[in-house]
Each structure stands twice: as structure tokens, then as C-alpha cells.
Length: 120
Length: 107
Image (cartoon, rainbow over all chains, first blue to last red; front, side, top):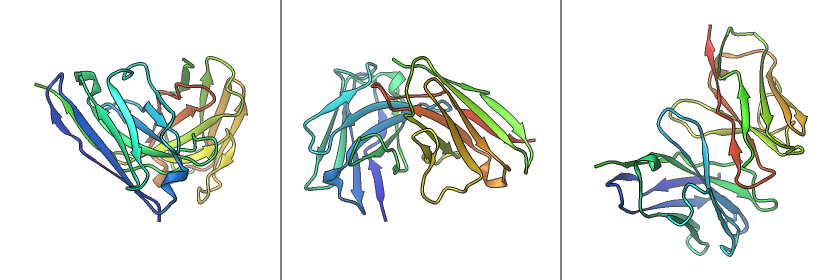
């Protein structure tokens, strides 16, 4: 059974940092592209970032470029999102999602989400 | 960035009703459109990919159609478990973008 389990969310002050993790199981993680998507409270879904299967290629939404870094450890079957210079508008539930092995944009499996709150 | 305009933003319907949601892209996205269902406090669930292909295990009362810039999503006979928010998403161009969502509520 495919499982994606996020962790690392919490309350952080504006300007602070946080690292999210997404532990994957039930599929060959090293073959799959992966994504982060966020959802501000009461609002819609927003794509944040994508990483290819070996970690050599990354893409970001303009709103997080230069502040967030997506990475992965295929030996540990884990995806990461390092978030720096956090702002109030980064407050959201953050989901990891699988992109699939081919085109990279499948979104067929999602984690349960982890809440990040940026507030003083 | 490609803008995805979803309508309506909400609707009220009864069990057994036929429900249709539309999604319009600001430029041609060919067939590269997903439809997701999201229930409160839960992660989105993929229902349809490539605009019209049903994901494994998704009931056949769900369907999608369209290409280019105009897409529709239909529930042929609304069931109690279908009350949720539905989102379209284009994956033809980066950044990937979602529609604003359609909340389907009980009448």
C-alpha cells in the first residue's frame, strides 16, 4: 500500500525556518517525481514545488522561489521542503504528492498534510 | 502563468441529481487536466486525468471531457458521499495551477 506521511509542521515566527519531511513507502520512491502543494486555511490548492526522480531537477512557484528548497534522500525514501524567511502568507497545510515515474505530474497519491503556521 | 477559471464556485444539489462543473484555461493546455475531490480535513483525491480518463477505482458516475481551453466534469447521479469540493488542475505548463474549487453542498 502506498503511503506518504508528512511531518515537521508547526508554529514559527515570521522570518523563521522550518523543514518538512515526507516519508514514502509502498512504491519505488527513487523512480518517482514528487511535489509539494499547499492549502491556506479555508482556501484552495496551490502548487509549490517539484523535484525529479534523482533530485537533479527542481522547479518552484514564484511565491517561494529563493526561500524554499525541495530535496530528497532516495536511500531514506524521504522528500523534504526547507522553508526559510517564512511569511504570514506561507501559513497553510502542506501536502506532498507523488508525480509518477514517467511525465512527473500524476498526483495519484497524497499525504495527509502537515500544518505550518507563521505568526508572532 | 495559466489561469484556471472554475465555475460555479459552489452549488446545492440533491441526491440523484446530475451535476456539471466547468473549468476554463487561459491558454491551450491540450488534454492535460486533472479533476480532484477533497473532503474537509482530508487530502485531495485524484478522480480524472488527461481530461477524461477515470483513475482506477473511481466510480463510473464521474466523467470528464474537453480539450484545449474548455473542460467539463460531471457526476451523473449525485451520491451522499460525493458532497465535497472539486478542483481542476492543469499540468501542461509550469507552474502547475489549480482552479478555485467548486463546493458541492446538499440542497
